[in-house]
Image 1 (cartoon, rainbow, N blue to C red):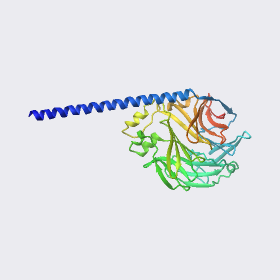
Image 2: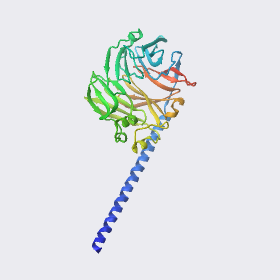
Image 3: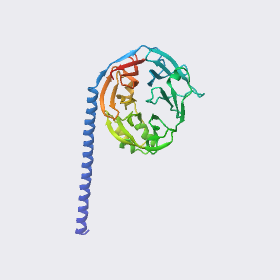
Length: 365
């Protein structure tokens, strides 16, 4: 080998070693920055939870929560609770008179019957109850006073394809599901697709399969029709995001990360198979509600295997523009909740110390 060729090979090896060293340093630097940012973010979340205001709940003396109630909403001074008993899907309670109205809407495939599980998208119209049958995508709107009088004929009925969550806008709907083109679809008044949009965080968006992206990235959505703002609260990753609907597009207003130490994100980043969740993964946001002026997000922040033994929950209160205003720590584990439109009082399905389902009232929320 000539001296000239040997010199060139030596210089090439030195260059490769230098580049490898630089790449290694870059990886180390990125890892350190990521680690420090995660620690800082975790400290911020823990501080928010530690400084949360204590929110006392008053148990409402009722004896009709006999099944497994998992959703509650309010309209026309009536609470509507999903509670599958006696082949009826919904329980109605009058908060003014303090009386149980009864159970409404039969379970089955007949006319004006429903097939659980149900989703109760919250409408800003106080006398309208929206129901989604998640198994078949059938959407119905009902007049709450009519339901109380056992008139089950819906005001409106639509069929949606492949949806998991739904919220109503001023001009149609926003839905979420495992879509190839993104996590969100903006629909017109009859369910036609106007636009699809991706709001997954980058580490989920890098996954190949739409179903995998949705398993990890799913969450609750609510819409403020007064300000045209969509709120998204993730179930497994801890993000809370707020978007302004401008024309047919969602523009980000605020983005928060309320996650705690967990191996899930690292597992997602190195995922090679189908999405899977473990009992040790965290449950973050388990419910969401919108009034005319505020968003309320129900936060657990505990491993799923321990969630039913938790003795409290947190409620994050945001402005209609997505600004965090207050954080409350409840004295009971809240399963689902709703808030009066004037923000004066909240109601929830909760767990008692004996792990029974109870109905509670929350003041000064």
